Image (spheres, rainbow, N blue to C red):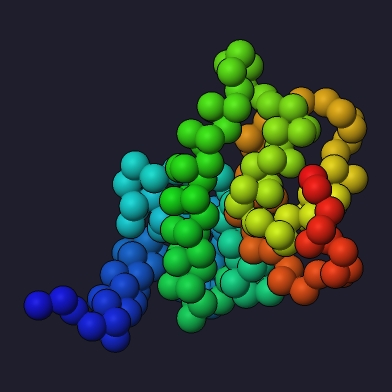
Length: 165
């Protein structure tokens, strides 16, 4: 018989409380590096960058801090990002036919469109304008946050739906 969502949440809370207690983490604020360590202990073998953990905190908590009662929600967001990145890493490697560890800006825009669909236009513009060297090749590390962050579902311009990337 499958356990209910509330039973699962209680188990997660119990595991988290035990982990925090055993590691003498008594603060109400949990740092990004502590969350990364907690995640590695809960999901051995899954990797996630500290940048992704920070982005997960910002996405979930709407600030740069993770409070103790938000940890489970942040861990769920880290999980989503980790599993998404596993698939995207494969896609990135397929686009990187020369095995350089980078792809073209055009290919990066293609990945953004594949992940975010019609809502990719705004993110693509912001990604391209944020690049320190426009036109240079793109690493997965540079692109990972843009790929995993949820899109703003409100389009700034309805014509974004019709524009080709």
